[in-house]
Image (cartoon, rainbow, N blue to C red; front, side):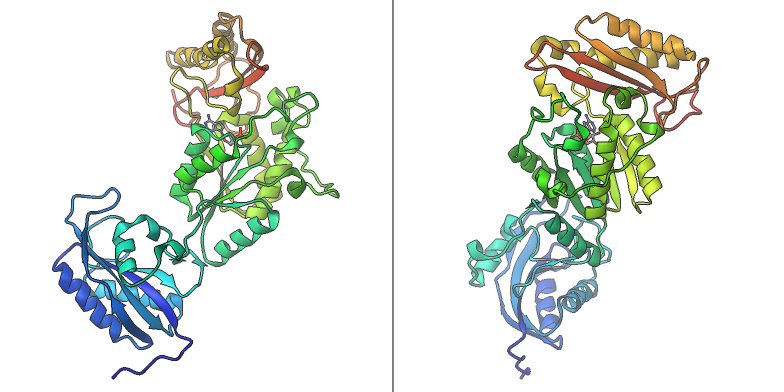
Length: 447
Ligand code: AMP
């Protein structure tokens, strides 16, 4: 007879699966071995059911799945180690490749009423409710699926304290954190940043905040498009863990008084046309860095000067994180995606493709051997001039990375940057775009 565990033992549910070898024997042996672990009482096992692989993976046979109810005195991390050990005993090679065939898969689904969110273990299991091969055995074990706990993903935080405490928990749990700061109205450009962060980090925080500090008087702060419902859907599809959407009072309380001063990277171009803009950007980004404490922060090359300012600030203020630049995502006709594009009238929308076309034309000449800075700039201006709807603010060719000015004469690469206004839609729209003269970012030696 097994010793009866003390009353404080925790009720646990474990999912079982196998699609390699003698599947039934693998599952039955796992249950026997589990029952022999000190500190574990097996209470009941479901019957086993066939299921096909969920998600993409190499061709493989169907699974046999079930679930088991236990009581245990083991801490969750120790029980997880036991489950991994049983997988290895069944012949599984760890670390396992995702979605590959396996003789045994044991998932810790629920551990009492505990919520655990670490790099090694997430409980309740984050996707239990999406999987029929988990739901069916749990129902068979007498659980009411509707009342079982499930994670809200993304979790939405409105308050700084909540962002702080969630990220503090992740850091304590050994997770890497990716941060994607945005002003919302998320489109495919933002989604590309979110997906990159999802692929590279254990946890992803997206922020949606239309930052008043980066708008000047007479700019479109009030009219900037806002769509939190749509943003939530984009974040959910990209697998974001936490969406931080504070109001202005959360970010800047009444006594708020400290601002980041920015330097050379913020001069000229947008900095000249929008005084104070980059100081406002740097201030909000510094605050988000301090609150979310990411290991990596993702920014679009679409806003190349902003990227240069943020890189400088990150180095100067010593934030211990990597700034990750992400390529521009464009519409089919070449227009760089932007939240403000919705305000373009139909004719301006058609005309706006000229920005990309003009830079491409100069890049093509560069590839064919044209090296003179001013001749390349003249080429961009000549194409832009064919489109009377575009009121050009500037055309520049700057050094890759820090966007320092290039002297007249020959260049061996660099980045073209343009800004132009279009005024025939619901409201005037300023569009920014840029293009590297060389294929690989930062490759100045290209010929
Ligand atoms: P915004 O919401 O406009 O402040 O943009 C948030 C982030 O998304 C910034 O890092 C932008 O550079 C980036 N982003 C915006 N549009 C695009 C795009 N078309 N392609 C890639 N990244 C983008």
